[in-house]
Length: 349
Image (cartoon, rainbow, N blue to C red; front, side, top):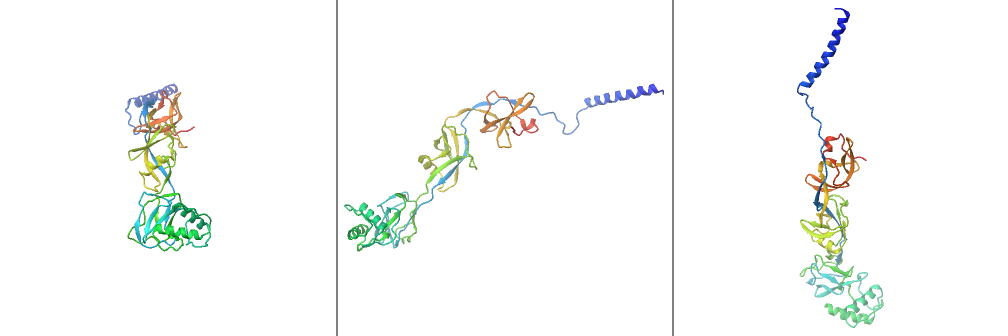
């Protein structure tokens, strides 16, 4: 074969083989494992719907320190009668308990009586005794910090009213149960008729623990739910509506009372629900359209000239298959399946 013929043959082979290979690849069925068609981007618009914002929350509770009323100095004997019960409100001058046939009264003062008082004794406790006698006995007006003959005579009258027949002008501190505050609500009395009286310093009763404040937070956190906008939200526990609030911080007495009735005193938190008193129109998007960012924020992806760009949104709860969002409008077009279409759907600025 001459040189020109060899050249033609080589060219023919080089041309024919690629063409044949191309035809073969085009005509054969796809038998390569894992080869699939590209995922189709699904573009949607938000759906308007009426929503009451219902969501689970925790109510974090702040309780006052418990207050105990204790037996006074010299308190001993046999309890013959108890005048107070659980829930009773005790104020200065009220008879609380009877021990060995002697009534013991409650009294609020700056400090408890701590010693027996008699003629010529001086001190702030004598002045407080004069105030007690002047307040509990008719036509008595005593002043000063010195225990006088008149004080002794008045103490005898006071003692007889309590059931003491031989006071001999000496005041016994075991007659008076000290109240730290102006009044005291009895929790569970530790005094029982027919039993020995609690010893001095022992608890006679503890006041029910008072709920001072409550705060509505996201479940399991201390974070504000971020939904309070000045409108009324209904707070409920175990399916029972308790009260309305416009703020996550609860401090009004009625709201705290209602919470106290459905929780264990001293408890740290209780689960509940909140919802709008008047539902509003909101925008809902498919749950898969909302993506998270490294900073904890949320976004959706919008078509942008053949590409997609993230737009931050405020995710506000939702329901099965949808999320309620703010930050976009009703005519916003967005990508419903960014996790399938994009290599990295993570929100970024």
